[in-house]
Image (tube, rainbow, N blue to C red; front, side):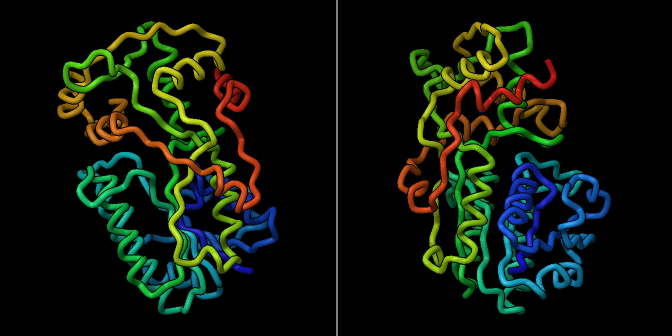
Length: 309
């Protein structure tokens, strides 16, 4: 079966492409000009290059396929450069959905995110809008909403690697963020980390099975960790001991207000808001249903973080 992939050159996309090939699918992947070097397995891939606003390039990617995976997404926006959540998550996905409907695509699979909501921050709201458009498109769809995704990156942004570089390796205590005046809640917000390989397996295993049509799945690992435990595990995987101190989020939020438009500033206001909200889900039954072996969030599975030591 031929499968079109949008967003194949990113962190999760590369794993999806590799898993498709391993399962004997024929991927057609849309890559923007200049990003061809980011993907591997070039001999097994059918690559179409272009701009996501170019309908002809999108049609060339989709027209021979039975399924479409939309995985284009960003974790922060830079409006002055034209890089926004509104475009990447919603407007571009609408274009791909409309063309998919034109070509009678059998199955459309969307990468969303756990915790999205209509009245959330920009990241959450635009993911929500894309979901709603897909649900009303008339296409057979499957939506995946992952929690925190971890795993070895290949030059891409990845949560645990970012924490390593911007916090764990610095000669300063790691902040245990808390909102308001309740210092006893410092670092209590929780996440359900899921390995990127498992995410790719969920996507690929859903393709040919009609029982996954018109379904929305929340993806998380089998265990939930609070912020303090995540920092401890990352530090332990690096064979380091990291001191931690309670830190009110308001001063950081004010700094982000002034500086998060610059890429060197490590965190945005949206990211801070979502961090404090937490991001958990129970996917135990999904792993059984999809017959996927979960990769746990442990020092062993985080050993890739030592690559730069």
